Image (cartoon, rainbow, N blue to C red; front, side, top):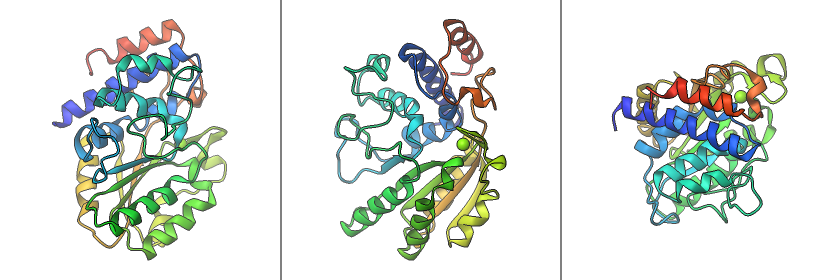
Length: 272
Ligand SMILES: [Mg+2]
């Protein structure tokens, strides 16, 4: 796919999130917007997947460590053909399989449960090792938040991944400098995050997380390394491309009104 097509898909996913969180009356829209471009590249360009056979053993694996951003994962899976688009309207309702955090046992295309923050890198490393031991030539992609990197298990997994020479593990750090409680740099800041991962012997690249061409190039570079795990540090904007949400942490968990859904449609209508 072209860079323009992938950017348009990212915006389509953003609007899906606004509409589904509105329909649900609950959810986390802001954290979805900062990873929309990464999600578009992974699901619509990069990953080896088969929506008709979600458990195909040779597939690439995906771990949304910041599981509360699942509305955009659900939108990507629906648009990829794992389940009908109208299922998105069921988000967070009792009779739906699309709950407030992803469930691998109920949702086709979801490789692991997540939502309990910090676990994604360790889970991804386990998948990467398991695939390698089976002789599967694939990649495991993980998205972690920046606030989430305050969790200690992230660094246990980082240490182990370097030791295991996990060249098939590629982690995206979504550096939007917001977490539920405020600005990351004003709480338990891990910035500069890149230095920490380098100290743990990871290959580190820093990019604009909304630049689709840069995301594609960073993945290509990461794949050249067969004996080191990769961290792609993505500078992002929470709420990206929804004007009233951009860099506004009030939208970490908030429901757009009908009027705000309309504003989002207007802002994105020529960009998707
Ligand atoms: Mg964050």
